[in-house]
Picture: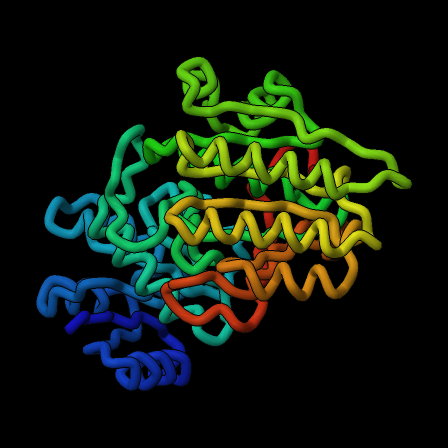
Length: 358
């Protein structure tokens, strides 16, 4: 049985977590400050620590430093649960070795998710070197702990993922995160793009801190344009041709990214779009990962409903005003085989996404 240490100086929060996790089948122990937490860690040997940041005697930052400086506890998974905003505390604590950072108040199911994701990452070493086939589950790590958490475990290894979002919400950037995750785990990626040339896509991924050049040179990453059709054109032939290309590419590539359908779909030509999605779903059901990004304005409500139904994973991106700035928000409606159910949309403020918000 997994043993969880809950460390929080607020009794109500500590006891709420202990009760919740006990009901979920965990063995749970508690501590009300950092000094007591260290004592429980060395004596009771928990499998994971949920650690508050602001506490008396020793705060969470001090506890984290002690744990990571001791060879006996350096690999102990630690999740920060705190009222300190992510902008203020996340980088410092992640640099010190925290596995995940969850702000209070958290969403229902978030604690169970973060425990499962963190323990799985710890068991796998969370490696991201080329060729690693390390995740026993249906996910591969994005390299971004917060994005992994919101996705219920990471990038789905197989199935059809549908990403809905208007212009400038970050669809292309999210597709590039998925692409990088696949490449770093040894999977080939064929990337259909309506916005980028091969050079501009490689350059943008590089600006995001990724290193796609070696994969592009080795033909592990291949990039092809999606033809743009006029607003009065029939999209049937264009979508049939794209579906044939997607099918051809799955013979040699595990991941196929379609970024995005905005320039090739016509709102009143539902049957052609649904036929394309059905073909992609069939390919994904054979063990491939097909990621499709689309602007909702290019699809009728009936097509969007069908897309959501067909998809193994359905994500939506939007932009919202958060005080003095605009933030991109990722809503996760469902992810097949996620660590916990994702029926309720989750929000992810994409602070780490830089570059053009395509």
